[in-house]
Length: 178
Image (spheres, helix red, strand yellow):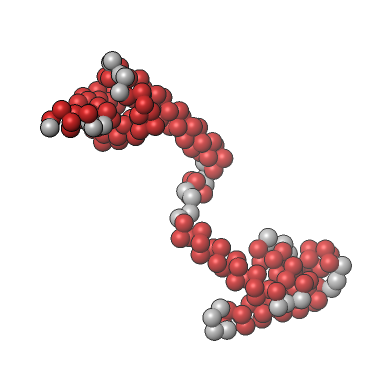
C-alpha cells in the first residue's frame, strides 16, 4: 500500500514539505525580515503552481526555488522603486502642502460621490443657467461679477439664479429619502 500512496504524491507538496523552511531561511538572510521572507517564500510556491508540469522533472529543486525567489525579489524591488519614484514626485509637487499627499479613504471617496450625485439631482430641478452658475460659483470659486459677464446678464440676475439653485438644493436635501 505505501507504494500506491507514493505514486499519488503531488510534486509541489513534496517540494514544499522538503524545501519551504530552507527557502524561508534563505530569504530571511537576504531580506533581514522574517515576515517578508515568509511572504516571499509563500509567493514563490504560488508562482510554482502554474508550472506544475516542470516540478516532477526537477533535478535541483533548491536552485529552481532560488531562481524563482530571485525573480520575485527583482519584481519586488522594481515595485518599490516605482513606488518611491511616485512618492518623490508627490513630494516635489506637494512639498509645501504634505496633507495633499495622502489619498482619501474609500469611505471618504464614496461619501463625496454620493454628495455630488445628490447635488446633481437637486440642480436638475433648477433652471439650466442657475445650475451652471451654482457650479461655477460654489464649486469653481468664480465671483458673481465674473458670472454676470460670462452669461452677459446683470449681477442681480446671477444672484437670483444662485438663490434659485440654493433653494432647489435645500428642498431636495430636506425631502424624505434624499
